[in-house]
Image 1 (cartoon, helix red, strand yellow):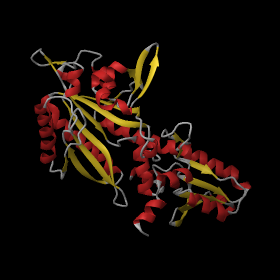
Image 2 (cartoon, rainbow, N blue to C red):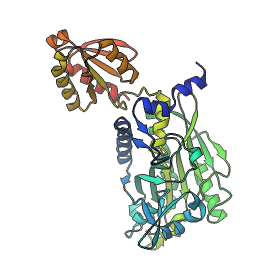
Image 3 (spheres, rainbow, N blue to C red):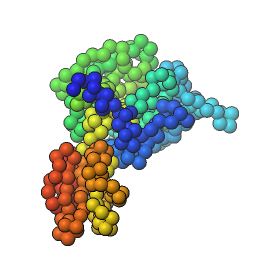
Image 4 (tube, rainbow, N blue to C red):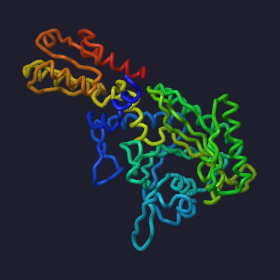
Length: 402
């Protein structure tokens, strides 16, 4: 099959509809509605994100979606980004709906006096942001107007910059390896419209380049594509068709902490300004989901599959037992559904295959008598008779080897 035909077959909008993952509505253009199946995938991704960040020493925060316009003027977003922002007016006060999470993280940092002993401080946020994209450019979950950035903002001392960026690179590698993604790395340098002094930019670019060289990372220079407040390292993941998707980013920012008068008391008892590292790994949860849908062609690994097992009773007399099997699987933390319809077995199996459900459990008289269930794996066919406990163990083993 040609790459183009294969890409059409994997189109995330088509699969999103067929597998009932998400939908778009004219009442909210570019703002996706997540259906129950899609929420399972989304929650699994967010659970993985929380788990890995907690282990890596991050603290989770949540900042408001709407904040006063002056904040965005102070941060520089107003000058560089206001054409892409949404606004509101409350009590004769102008507000902006956040297009980025960084100013909120800075306000939390500034909410108390900080000491050098606390640094690095690593704030992580699954932050909902809104950006005005042209209606003609909207594309399923890939190009949207509202999305959740898996952001983190690290406040570090100058002497901690390189070691923290090394840790961030290791965490990004851990995430992408988890999904089996290869990736390419780019160093994006000062854009035409930038904030701050050239020598600070040179210092920041040198720091990022030095970490990439020390770690032996192959990278390309992407001149002029940095953020307005600092240079960045961009990560492009490669999917199963070899297509490249820009996801993760690590940005080094000397500017914004100065603009907001961020400070910490140093070992010398004097006030110092921290450096800020902005970074995202999924990029956006929505976009990463779109990439995964296309990468797996909707055939998700067991841990991500919205329904992990479809239980198919042969006749209505097997329904009570089927329901009992479902309850036991759910008690073990697994996701199962029963197909109670009075349809032929062949049809039920074909439909479960079409829904790309990883496992089917068939229940008839023989299975009820022996308390041994006939298990079918998608594409592999019958995998034998198993007790409920054996099924649970098999599923857990497959999930743990993700």
